[in-house]
Length: 294
Image (tube, rainbow, N blue to C red):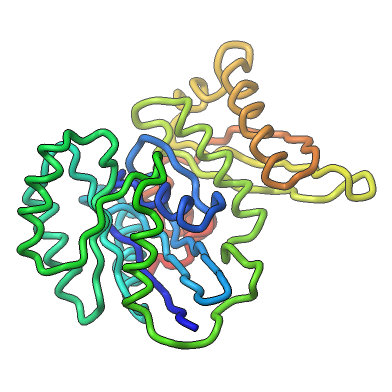
């Protein structure tokens, strides 16, 4: 059988996580319209009787402006080591930029097979798609235009990626779809809902700490307690909202998704705490789970 690791890289908000979720067939990574949604290296595993592909979701590539962002960019670079192939994801519905070209050249020049997925073609005029495919043809890469939202050309993309992988044994058990724990996914679900509800800088300045994650009532319900960490007192006030309305609303949305994910009832308690400028503090980043900080 064929098996291997594939690093999925690209600019922020290119659609990497959505694409991986569709290819794997399960939600293994949170998604939102905002850049910087993915902060960690997350594995999504696609297994059939004939092959197993371990897709490595990575933080989007962009200019780092704080220590956390630097850590995220290092995570992306490190993820391209010890893999069998690279899947470069390019959202070009507004045109191909010089930055796109430079990044594509960087990752396609690695001593690894590289596949280019041109995403979001469902919102791209056909004339633009044709012209961009002609332009990208000179890169001498396998190019697959896809729409994750419309599930278009996903099977073809998997087939092209699979052709780049070696023969081998299964890397993981048959039923494994991610290397992340349920506790980690609970924190990500909470962060996803905050990304979707709040604007501007607030969503990017929050972190989630799960303090309690326990089965109760004979295994019928999870009791979950978590902290929402933000950077400024006024951010805390906005997150809580007048009379606690905002935090109640976002917690309710998160709880519903947690129950779907865990397939059990959830009793959720949330607290908002301030840790000023935590994204630029080595000690706070380690405390919040970013162990790769040097």
